[in-house]
Length: 319
Image (cartoon, rainbow, N blue to C red; front, side, top):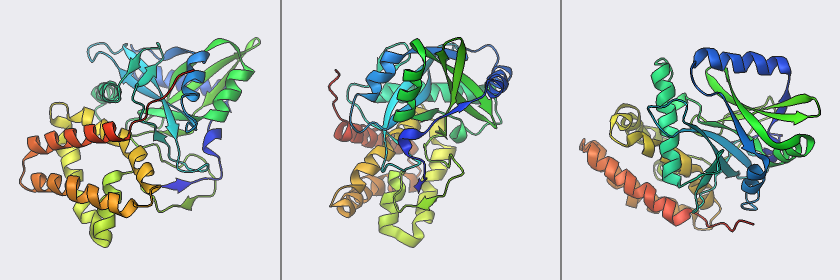
């Protein structure tokens, strides 16, 4: 994982009217016939920010409720934590009660990942040249910036617009101020992990890894970890997405992995926990892949991810 001089809570910036029009029009041209703007109550954004002291910002993620209806898009408000104040990556907090969409409806962790996978598959269907793994799932705004935007603007809601630039679907937030609009652009896209370099700031390397399997395998195999991980990547890229329900669990792994990895990283028995994951979860999964038992491997993956969600999710008290 990387760090930046920019605090994670301050991610987000204003953009010009010209920038807004250029890139929102680009989205409409590339994905015609689909909804491209969504209203979100300010009170809902504030509620999500206040769910936990861990919240450093909100990841606005994209879901699709009905695969046959490209206009059934749901904007999912995912509260995120971070390893440090200056982390570039962020982690979706695993909340037992689930996550709100822009309509105020709530979805469990698994339902959220199903919505995301349906959206990504729809984008992939529309543009076959796009790589499934690299399609944008959402964008992150820091807590401090969001609260500033809300305070500086009028009305009781904001509008999120889809824009498109360099094969990335950017969320742009529009706020009303007197007779003008203020447009705020994202800084961190999530395809599927939210850890890319976002600003031309000085970058410092950290030893942590947001991918749980990579962290566990590296702890055991060290120098030869890439060879071991390649087997899982081949299954992910060439088998999993074509299996029934595979895309949902693809999304679920990347959705929960950073949060679980971060939790483990802060424990005094970190090494023992990673070894337990390796021997109890990764090794049996590895054997199934070696034996080409892919359906059994998917079933094992489902059980493992469901167990991690149950073990690491937190219950929040809403005010």
